[in-house]
Amino acid sequence: MPSINRVVMQRTTRKWLEALPLAEMDAAEISGKTGRRFDFRSYRRFRFPRHDICDQPFLTSDGEVRKFDIVLANQVWEHLDRPYAATRHVREMLRPGGYFWIAVPFYVPYHAAPVDCCRWSARGLRNLLIEVGFHPDKIRAEQWGNRQAALRNFETPWPPPYEPEADDLTNDPDFPICAWALAQK
Image (cartoon, rainbow, N blue to C red; front, top):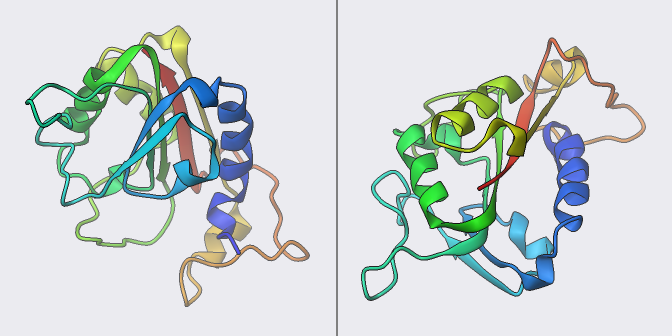
C-alpha cells in the first residue's frame, strides 16, 4: 500500500509519463523503482550512493557520458550533498528533447539515508531546473499536501500508509507534503 505522501504524486506522474512515447525511450533511474512500472525500450537503475550523481554524470566503459531519453529520480534528491551539481549532470546525460522527472518530499520527517539535506516546493524544483539550464516553458511542476496528511507524518511507523476511507486527498497549496516536476531538455 502506498504512503499517503505519494498517492497524488504517483497518479499525476503516471498520467504525465504515459503521455510520452515510453516504448521508444531509454530510461535511467537514480535509486528508486518508479521506472519498473513503465514499458520503456530500456531501463537502467543506478543506486545512490554507489553511483553518486553529484560527482559526475554516469559514464560508459569508454568514459563517455551515458545518454538517455528520460532520467527518473524519486525521493533521492533530498539526500544529495550537492543537488545542483547532480541536476546539471542529469541534464548532461539527456539526449536532445529528453526528460528529467524528479519527485521530492517537502513536509516530512528528517530521514537520513544516508543523509538528509534539503527540501523543495514545486516552485523550488522549478527554480532548480531553470538554474541548471532547462527552459521555463519546458518544465511542469506540482506539489500536493494538506494538514491532515502532515499530521499523519508524525505517526509511527513512518511513512503512513494511505487509508482511502479516512485520508483526505484534497490539496492545500499552502501545506505541501511533496513536490514533483518533469523537465524537457
